[in-house]
Length: 68
Image 1 (tube, rainbow, N blue to C red):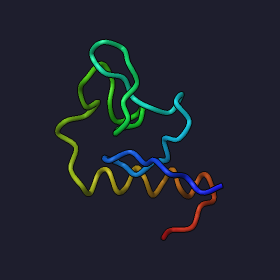
Image 2 (image 1 turned 90 degrees about the vertical axis):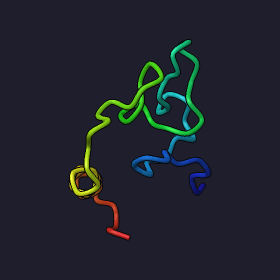
Image 3 (image 1 turned 90 degrees about the horizontal axis):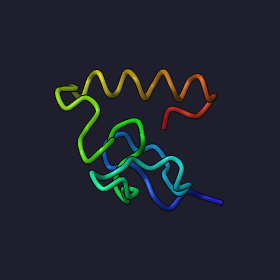
């Protein structure tokens, strides 16, 4: 089954509620993953696009996912 929901920051699939970030009231975010967003704020607000791309590329390689 193809993922339907993706993190708006890093594009990680977030169909599984356990993969979603949290809001200030501890409810689950419908927009961001647990790695990018926690307690209603971004984990690394100063992260550059290049740094995010590097992290995502490394994780995709570890998971043996295609680069596209």
